[in-house]
Each structure stands twice: as structure tokens, then as C-alpha cells.
Image (cartoon, rainbow, N blue to C red; front, top):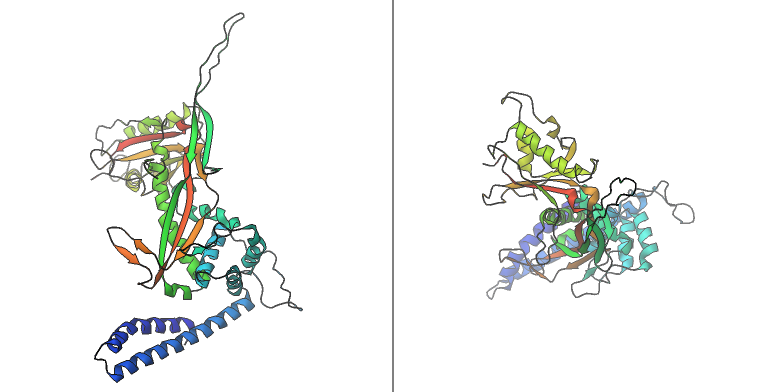
Amino acid sequence: MDLEQLRALLREKLGNLTAIKAKAMAADATDDQVKALEDALNEIEGIEKKIDLAEKAEAAAAKAARPADAPAGEPEGGQRIEPRPEQKMGLDQKLSLTAAAIIKVGKGAPQKAVFDLLDQEGYGSLAKELRVKAPQGFVNTGETTEGGILVPTQLAGGIVPLLRARSTFLGANPTRVQLVNGAFKQGRGATGATASYVGEGGLKPVSTPTFDAIDMKAKKLAGIVPLTNEARKWTVGNIEGYVRGDLQNALSLTMDLAAYLGTGSGANPTGIFNKSGIQTVTGTFTNPKAPTLAELDAFATAMILKLTTANIYSSDTWRWVMSYRTLMYLASMRVGDNDGELAYPTLQGANPTWKGFPVIVTNQVPTNLGTGTDQTLIGLVDFQHVLFGEEEGIVMKVSDQATLDVGGGDLLHLWQQNMFAILAETEHDFGLRYAKAVVKATGIRWGAP
């Protein structure tokens, strides 16, 4: 019986244990029922011992093979020689692998246990890197009542690459700036100076430019991933994949909604489409739900000209931002009639473009805006003028004692339900270096039912 079969058998036995225990602990329990509980516990203990031995055998094989970062075998004298070239591993993967290893060794385990586990499971170069850099400090000490997870400071920057795979906002590569003590403030010109040619003895022009400021303050984004305690029996690689996927989904989608349409109320940041000073366009359509191609072309041209007349010249950093409903409507339009050629063939496929500029399509642009509750918006943004201010560091914690409010009044009791949860927190804000680099059109009803 292999390791996975043993784990499956253990899950089955643990699932049956509750009923056996209830019978054995009853006031009128028979000797046979008590004996059944004793036998079940002994059987579970025996399976756990076999799993422990099987895991040690796999760890020994992995250490010998070094599949992740080193060749099999040890050189004479016992000194390991790192392979060249070493495996390329991004900060995001290092971050999630480190978190997975800490989860697996359990709360309160020393740093050395994390390094040793990574080494045993084939991530020797990462373990070596962490050992060397660990004295430089950690983001949090882990001495909290919740049971902290230590994330080395040098991996703190991995949270942004971790989220970029799912965040359309980060995928557009806004300009990243560092928040110092949770803030970034810098003056900027709201309206520019003017100049003109003058004749001999003529008066030189006097302009009165106006100024405002880029003012960003750190806003905390937090996500919680619950897992059953059985997950600690997975390999580090399996835990890493699970944690990575859930964090990407939980954090990046929330970040996208805030980045585009955050209201700025309470603890929420202000999204780029709600920033003061951005440009707006109002489309003119005879039928708001079914615009003609001529009307759509005039509308798109108006949005492009809003940027160019503000001296923002077209570049590869321009992006359209729209909902899936809007994209599908435009992508399905045909010239002439339903049998004609596609009006916008470049909107087909995984990397759509419209009027020569890439399209960001996201569910985080809702289609129930406005008084009619069937409206959405379209944006055209030069992302080189969009700022993503981030606080250095990420805090990750683990708890098996907390009670989670999962919404709707439903509570998840971790200890009672044989679970633990991972909490990840990061702080950031969104800003605009030049407000006119964002153009927004609201009241879009194309494709609405």
C-alpha cells in the first residue's frame, strides 16, 4: 500500500471514529462497543505509524534525488555541490513555498525545522538561501497568540508577483512606488504653464499653473485560507499550490475591484476611475443597447482624443478596461448583417485589442451600475501614469483556535472542525501621476438584456 492509499485509509478510519466513540462513551455501552473503540484507535495509530515511515522514506528519496534543485548523490567528503545553473525560482514561488513549509512543520516550530523540511523535499537551494539570510530578520516574530508564520523579509516582495497572475490591474504594469511609513505624497501640476512667440519688445506671456498632490496612504488587504489539518500531511509542493491558488483568487479579485472602482470610504482605497480630475466621455447612441458601428467608432475616437489632446501620446502602456459583457458584444458585432464579417476581429481570442490598444477584460467592472441597474463603464488608461504604492512586507499568520465569520452570520470554528487557517495581509494604495491619463465613459448598456 503506497502513501496516498495509506492516507485515504486513515481518512476513512477517522471518519468512522466519531460514531464508534459515541457508542463506546454512552452510558449503556457494552464491552464489545468499548473494545471496538480501543481496536479502532489502535488501528488508526498503526496506520499513522506507517504513514510516518512512508513519509520519511519519500523524504529520504527526495533528498537523495534532489529533484528540485540538485543532482542525485553526494560528493566525497559529504560536501554538497550546488548544480550550475541553479533552478530559477521567482520571489512569489519562494514566498508560497516558505509559507507551505511553515504550515507543514506546524505552529511554534523553530526556523531550523522549516529549512530542514525544504531541504528534505528537494528545495535545497531555497533552504540554503533562507539559512544564509535568516539572521537579517523576519516580517513578524511569530510570537503572537494566533501563532504567527515567519516570512523572511527578503521574500516580502513576492506578494505582488504572486497576485499578478490573477490581477488584471497589476498585469497592466502600473508604476510601482514605495510607501514610506505607510504614505507617499508628492506635488504635481494640475494645469501646465503656457508659452508663445513674441515680437521684439513684446510682452512675455505670464501663466498661472495650478498644483495639487499625489497623496497615497497604505490600505490593508487581508485574506484567509482555511484548510483541514490533514493538509499538513501533503507535500510542501502540494500545499504551496493550494495556498498560491487560494491567495491569488481571494486577494487579487478584491484588489482589482478596489483598484478600478474603490470608493475611498472607510478602510477602502479610491480606485482610478473614482479619482478626482480624470476625464470623462459621454457616448451618443440612438439605441443605447444597440449602437451602430459608426456610433461606436466615433465613441472610441472621442476617448482616444481625450488622451492625445492632453498631450498623452499613444504608447504600448495604453489599455482599455471593460466588462466581459461589453467585450462579448463588441467581439460579436458584424458588418452589414448577421452573416457579414466581424466588425472587430482583433477582439477575438485571449489577447484582444480594440483600435490598436490591448483590452483588459474583468468581472470586477460590474454591469449593474447606474439608475437602470444594467449599465457598466469603459475606461481608457495610460498605465505608465498609474501608481501602485506598496508597503514593504507581508504578514502571514496561522491559527487553529480562531472562529471565522464566513459571512451571512455563519461561523467556522477551526479547532472544533479540525481545521486551521492562513491569514495573509499586505498594504498598498493606488494613485495617478497625471489624472488626465484616465478616461472614463459611464452608462454603457451594450448587450444589456
